[in-house]
Image 1 (tube, rainbow, N blue to C red):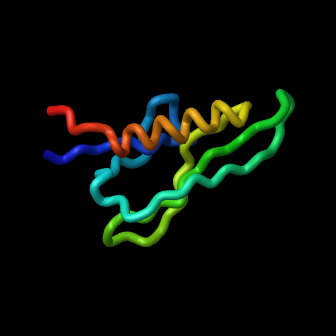
Image 2 (image 1 turned 60 degrees about the vertical axis):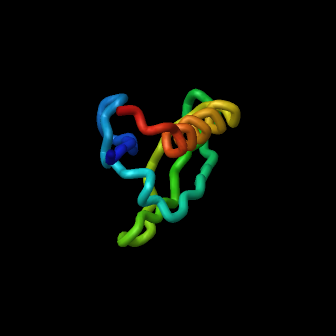
Length: 88
């Protein structure tokens, strides 16, 4: 059974997916965290360098967070989706 997981749409509404991927086709994935700021303080942007079978490496936005712990939680949630069980 094919299992698809969403990559969020940075420009869409919360919960919108920009792309759905089959985690079985991931050949490599690495978190990319950048730190910046806005009027509310520190902002961490979490993106992925993602390589899927048959496609070139791409960078996908995952989340914008206000603490390092929140950024870690977002990364872990993504890993949990990738490694999670297939639900029929």
